[in-house]
Image 1 (cartoon, rainbow, N blue to C red):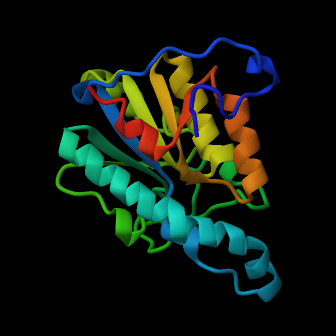
Image 2: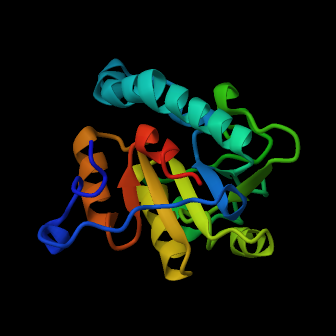
Length: 222
């Protein structure tokens, strides 16, 4: 994989290669989005479970273990690790945004103390690492993350999590609009299907973020 040429949309097909990336650990945060128990629970219906099997496989075989290594590396470098999760503060979900109240896949009613809303055990926060609760797709617009990042002098946000075409994309766009430098780690993200994952990466790459692999990311720190 070559992050300078991969995942290019029509708009950037012939664009010049971007400049090299240099990340100062003290000015960088790793943001892990929505890798929660609810999304790893297999559907009761066999046909629905089979439909989602490629997603489960990608999460268990690649995204979760690779993100765990990414988190360990960030901690060893002094990079701030932040988690965001979907959860409502009211048991009846009155505080949710409209997008999470509409019928369909995105309908989510997960009180903050429920087991379903917790971050998976493999990626548990340590010490005073920040865990944000959101009732929106964007981790920026639905929390005080913007203020937190500014207060800590963060300029670069590295993103991992799910779903690429939903909460990842929404967060990336929000951060870019606030002039943060955003990097999405491709092998630490997933959408429901590989096609949706790749398509969204092409949409957001080069304009809202840079899409890289976890291996490439390690070479950016200075």
